[in-house]
Image (tube, rainbow, N blue to C red; front, side, top):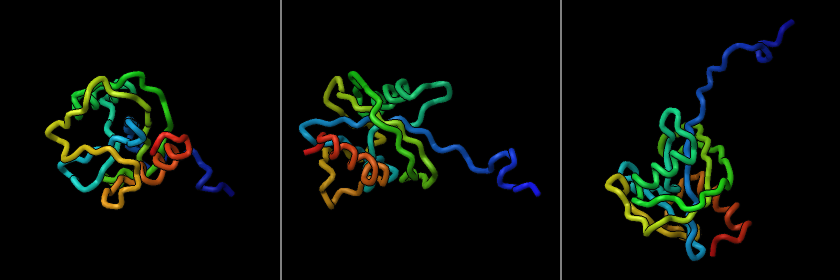
Length: 144
């Protein structure tokens, strides 16, 4: 008897939402932003790659669009599999550490920009940031 779960039948599960994001840390605090569409949820700056765009190009484009800044010396930090806070779908977020070439200035699509050590109970962080990235950054000694 053939196990139907072991066949090569195409998967009905959709590919995860792919996101490139930046962990920008200054003075032991992480840069987080919120969008006007969901002003109470803070996440890492970045976004979805356009077709044919790799993660680093997407990151540079998104940081330019969101913050009017470019990443300096981006380095792969981690890949996080989680549920996207706004869309509620599976997500694969590639996180790079980087500094910015200038002071970030939030674009019109952003509601707010903050620096956090992740311990502010009044700041609602996206689960991928709160549950995955902050523990990693604390373990590395990057946060105050």
